Amino acid sequence: MEGKRGEPRNKPPYPTVAGYNGKPTVINNVETFVTAQIISRIGVEAYKKLGTKDSHGSKLFSVSGDTPNPGIYELELGMTVQSFVDEFGDGDAKAVQVGGASGFCVPRKKFADTIIGF
Image 1 (spheres, rainbow, N blue to C red):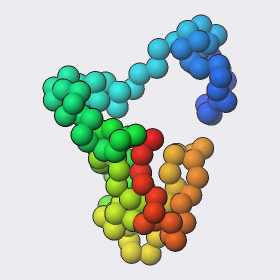
Image 2 (cartoon, rainbow, N blue to C red):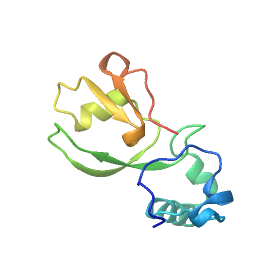
Image 3 (cartoon, rainbow, N blue to C red):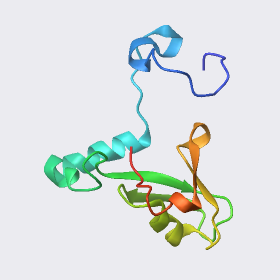
Image 4 (cartoon, rainbow, N blue to C red):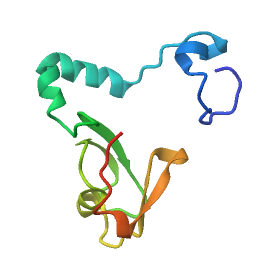
C-alpha cells in the first residue's frame, strides 16, 4: 500500500510504533480475530490448556508441496514435526520448512525432537 516491496522488515520499529506511512498501526488478521473469539467463547483458562506452556492454543498451517493432503489446517500447538509429517507427509519428507518464507528448514533427523510452537 505504501509502494514498497512486499517482504518481511527487520524490527524494531514495530508496526505499533511506526507502521503504515510511518504512523502507529494496529495489525490484525483473520487468525487473530478467530483466536479472540475462541478465548471469548471457552474462557482464558480453557484456552491456556490447549498447546504448551509457552505456546497456547492452535495455529493455522499451510501444507503444500509433495503431500497427499495439501490445504490449510488448524492444529493444536505442541505437536512434534514428526507427528505433523506422519499426518500430512508422503512418508519420504527430507525436511519441513517452518516459519514461512523467512523461516528455516527442520531436517528429518530432528523431526521427533522439534515441537511446533511460537
